[in-house]
Image 1: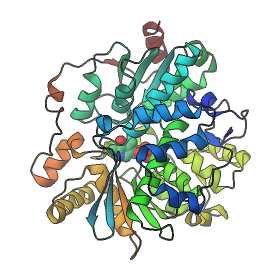
Image 2: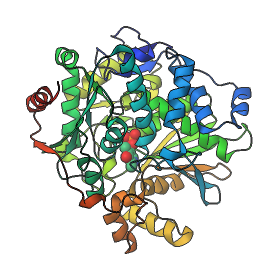
Image 3: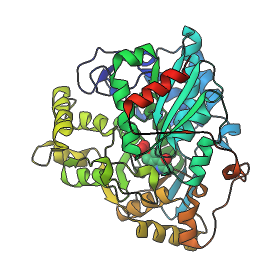
Length: 469
Ligand SMILES: *Cc1c(COP(=O)(O)O)cnc(C)c1O
């Protein structure tokens, strides 16, 4: 499998070449030159497979330069009942007739990002052990990527993590998850700004190729291809869990921020999984909902990002969207390059009067948005009717998912975090605290370790230089 850039200006590379990098040399994102196709008979055979077997089958098609036995070992070590609390890894549970919740948040940090990040930690370790090299991971988080990355990389030899987060804008639980880690290879940097400031710093450091090479900078943001690949697996797992035969279609509702999770759903569909609709749910920061409804993608300056009660979706510029647009425009890299140049210079591009706009529906995408009131209502209704507590992000997905539900088509709503991470909103909705899973009781009282910096690329580079060997 070769990987090409969405902007057409980088040499094709293998999986291991793009594993540790962020953006391609031309500023584009790595995409497989073609999506492997899964035949009907194969999909039927996969019905008997465990999560680990399914993961191996899917990943060996993308990571074909890792020896199969090594990949199997990495997968077996990653997706264990000890780490994800059951052998199912991503259990599906019914919500109401024809509607299911896909539990993606049973990993160490209680959000779906663990599923990809735990794999990434083991893939990185494997790659570095072969070369003997070191790696400085630079990441940006709005709250869940950071903890997931740090728990996946803590104590790993040859790896340091520099994680940028918006100062005082994460929930107390998320903050405590990251800042309480005392491992010497973990550096928490709180940026005086919003998530987009953090993401912009990561992008500009990654674009400084000399600095990146000299200091062995790698990224773990959702633009990392291996993360998207890891997430493809649970779309297959969930599909197989709620259907009896491949003749059936399933729709997925996905709480969306950076477009990583739903991009994996898009790829699963392109591989031949019978997905009817990919229902994209945003919160008040609805640039993606606008794009999918109108064909106009208009990013917002960081100051215009609204802080919401589903903070992991507080994003004004969704970096993974470029992968989907590349497919939408028939893999015309020159056009993608022009569109993103326009996005840089004018803050928007418009596909509404092009033939591509109507193709959005051909790819199964529909969208909607959810407000604070909507998510509290949804949390209350699910609690009252089903006795289940769902988190605020999942509630956005359920709200929009139900609006697009169709008779006879199972709807799978992705549970992207557990409610304990966003306790204040749960208290507001239900007048009670969410359950605290075992092992997390004391988290917010542990001592915290972090550095506060201005949103300044030079200051962050300087910090990295001073703290890496
Ligand atoms: C990261 C995150 C999202 C958004 O996922 P993307 O892949 O960025 O679209 C949604 N919900 C939660 C809880 C998250 O942590």
